[in-house]
Image 1 (cartoon, helix red, strand yellow):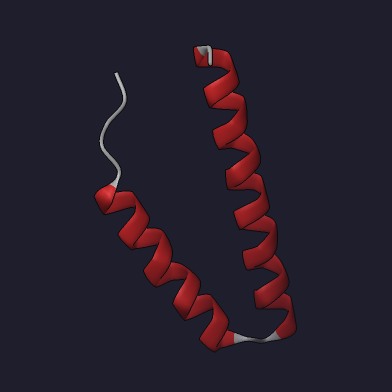
Image 2 (image 1 turned 180 degrees about the horizontal axis):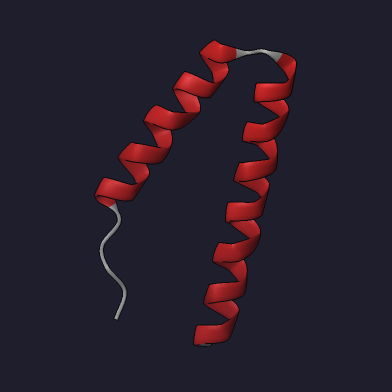
Length: 51
């Protein structure tokens, strides 16, 4: 997988996550958003840096 393909996949994943978060905020599901933030912060801290 090329660098461009990896970046494109990460951008698509980020867009899906942000859309889901926006839907949760629009629906007033604060519990769902809190869970999503915990998962997001855990995912960020565990991912190794890419070179």
